[in-house]
Length: 68
Image (cartoon, rainbow, N blue to C red):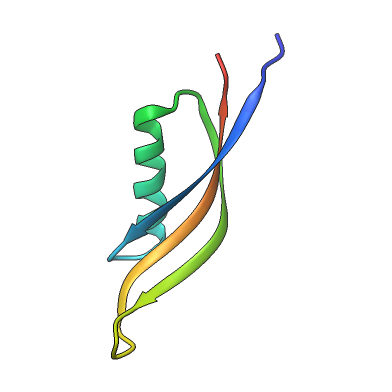
């Protein structure tokens, strides 16, 4: 049986780490999308406050899911 997949781009932020931002994004995508298959981390970004301190870890990722 063949299948068709779709890719959507999402962003997620964590105060802890890039790894946690990825986990948060995948968990959130799983609440509305079924058939998640993979995630490709497209970009990583550190968010800073006015003093140069890290306030957040942001990832932009492409999520692939199979259509029903």
